[in-house]
Image 1 (cartoon, one colour):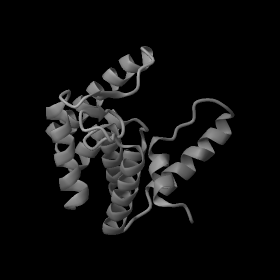
Image 2 (cartoon, rainbow, N blue to C red):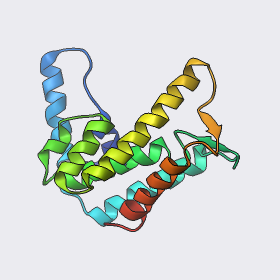
Image 3 (spheres, helix red, strand yellow):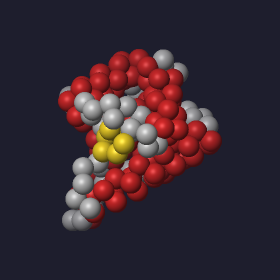
Length: 171
């Protein structure tokens, strides 16, 4: 009853991976109850936008020649925050949104609600997969998650456009 929005955002992705089955069922009940709360969409949008701005200021790349796959504008974090906002703003009316904790299925579920179109969900999922694949390759090479800023221009522009429309502009 007193959690901050970012704590609710974390619940979108939370899942039980091991342990007592009864405890797991209890957690899932609480998770569903929290995620399905009705929220003021404008207040939620402002809180998500402010949290992302703080994260971007703290973790975003300072080098214009490099793109931080996770933290820079148009990257993984923008997609994750979009998904989290979508779930938190729509789950009261669409209980299926709390079924899955992963971004790809959540994007599909959000398109089922009409919050985004199926094409938009596919484009965001494709960008997410491309970023994650590149980030995993870099991690395996023990390299930081930054690439030349010339990589992924279409995906970055697309994710940024969705962010501006759904979070900055509000719809």
